[in-house]
Image (tube, rainbow, N blue to C red):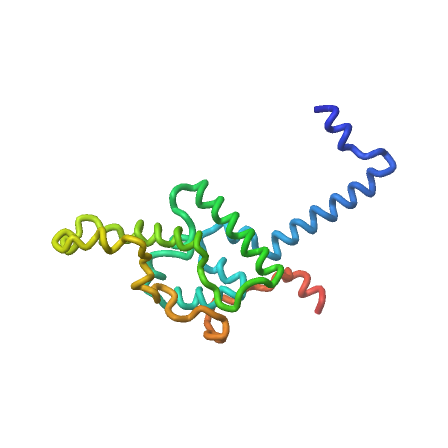
Length: 192
């Protein structure tokens, strides 16, 4: 352990610049965490999804749907198997989204990808399983096995819960929580 510390400790003449640079990069890293509201993504609050302007149509359509009363974005779009799987998926998906938005690679119309479709399908079945287990209609008609082969829930329920709207241009004045300014109040006062 001592050898590692000696190896990482800069020579005496480089200690001050090394401390200044370390402080700069630590501060820059913390500023990126603050300005990106990275901590908000740990929660299940749907307002975290509109930190990015591009998600406004999805938030607005969910907010006017019946699903608003019973579930959040994460209930449908994140695996609910266990705590570890949930947060690993959120981290992986979050990094992908951050990369898309930082490099301006996001599409104008957001469509769910194949991996996300599997998650949503599992969550549909998890929440609505009462409709499928011991359903008298399926028992009588023997329709259940035929219905669920190679089909997704949204093959029939395509507009649940986001409706037909999937782009910013289709809901330019959607009422969504406006992201707060990343500039601290004390800095705003100082600049006035």
